[in-house]
Length: 356
Image 1: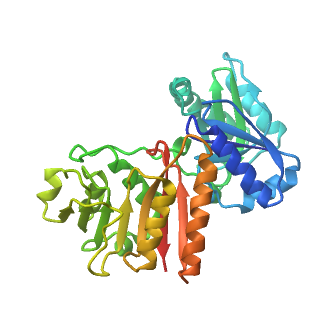
Image 2: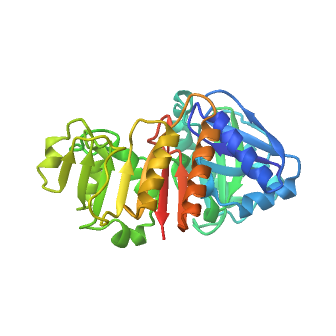
Image 3: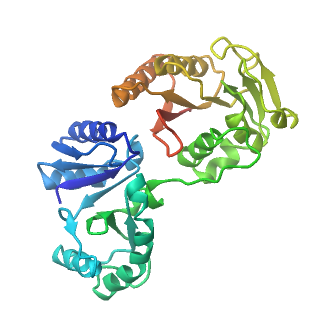
C-alpha cells in the first residue's frame, strides 16, 4: 500500500495536497499527489510503501488542517460491474488478505456529482457488509476498536477500497460534521463556532472549559452568530462590533455590546476566559491580535478564523501559525494550537489556541 486518499472541501485540493506532501516529507516520506480540480479528494503516492505505512500509523490525523478523512488504498481504482458491484469488492479484499475489520463505510466525494451517489451508497452498504462478513473480511459484529474498511465511490462503476484505524481517523461519515441550524440564531455563522467547540474541546472537559458563568469577548460580533453559542452556554459576553446586535441576544441580559473597533478594544479586568473572533481582516493581523490578548493575560483560550487569500492559502496559514508560536514562545507562554478547515468554513480556517 503506497497510496493515501484524503477527503477535502471541493476547491481546496491544492491546499490538501500541499499539506500532506509537506507533513510527509518532514517525516522522511516522499512522493507526489494526484488531484483534479474540485474533485474533493487527493491521492498521495509515496515512493516507499513501508515509510508511508509508518507515517500513516504515527502521524496524528487531527494535526492535518485541510483533510476531512484519510485512508490507505488497498488497490488502484476498482472497476465495478453495475450488475454485480459486490463481487469485485469482496474479491479485491480477499486478494489483499484483508480480515477482521470492525466497520464498513461506503462514501463518496462531497461534490454536486458525488452527492448523487448517496442513495447508491446506502443501498450498497447492507448487502456488501453481509458479503464481507461471510467472506471473513468483516467481523460478525461491528467493533469500534477494529480497523475500518472504506469503499469510496467515484461513480456507479468505479470506487477506491482502503483501510483506516479508528484511533487515527475521522469518526464522521464522509469526515463531515453536519449540524442543524438553530431557528433562533441570528446568522448561519453560528454553526462555525458550534463545530469548532465540538472539534477542539473534548466533551468530558466542557464542564470546566465551556461552562456557565464564564466571561467571553466576541470581536466582530454582529449580528451575533458566535455570541449566540456563548449565550447558549450561559456565559456573560462582551460583544464588540460597530454594527447592530440581534435584539433577541440583548434581551437575555447576558450580552454587553460596545460599538468600537475590535482592534482597539481591551478589557478592564483580567477575568475573561474565552476570546472568539470572526472578523474579516488580514490573517496576519488577526494572528497578532490574538497573541496580544494571550500575552497581556486578557484571555485563556481563543477560537478565531483566518480569512484566506485566493492564492497560497496553506502557506498563509502556516506562516501565521509559525509567527504566533514564535511570539508566544518569546513571551514565555506554554500554549497548544489546533487548526482545521471546518465543514462550515468557506474561504477560512478556524484556529484554537489554549494557554496553560
